[in-house]
Image (cartoon, rainbow, N blue to C red; front, top):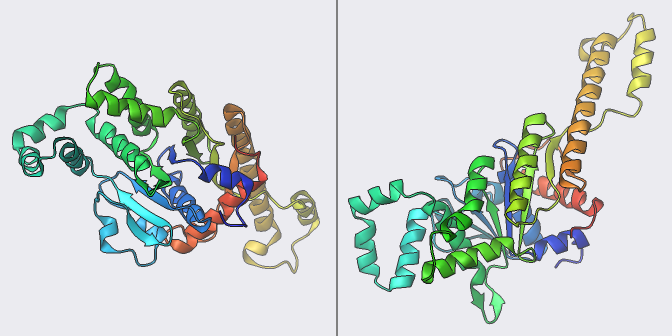
Length: 333
């Protein structure tokens, strides 16, 4: 670890798998990128993992990502020192799994290309989620000279509903299997998810009623599955109104407006702006307190940054904000 790494961040980065989820639009992909950058800066080899049909993380992590980073791959693609990316395609991953199990590459490819088999896969429930988790389990077990090849996997999980479906799949499939290699591998996936030393769940919300409600519901279900949650992340929070906002409002109320600046600096416009700011801050504080109570731990509050979160610069800024919030919060357990 880097000497500048806080104890709380160091504890978080000791995990093998971080699962990030939340309502769509809360910035979970940006947070995955930020966590990956924080890990790399601390000297921990991190893989930012996504499962969607298109890669969105490479441009957040590199100003010139290689073309291979946007393609589905069996092996993580290097973007920077200690920083890797992987987009999991379930069909390609299933092909890889069958090749590893059967050792018959040509036969497996022929079966996978069969139209009837592909139609069967289209109606088979849960296999995409299971093979995705299986890939993470497989990567977490790989070693080089006795050390983990991929010490930290950070999963940009699907949004709340699908994210929960992903995490419940091992339990659902396990009930249909009594023995055999597949049952053994499903048990391994389930054990990885429930191992609090290796796996942690991070919920991302905005300081708004609906995202907070979804985060609380998701946390409850995740706890039922035996998966340990970290402190929730409340993203894009407005800064508190200035401490002297009330005093400014009273002073503005006493002005008659003669000689006052024009535009938004005019007393009535500035008073309205400060009032809106105060009301928004109050509403957000209420939602942050609600989120913290529901998790039983103070939420990690990240500001609404001025930098656009569409490139490495914004990712670095968000990583810094997360590291600061984590260092100021209760030590991670």
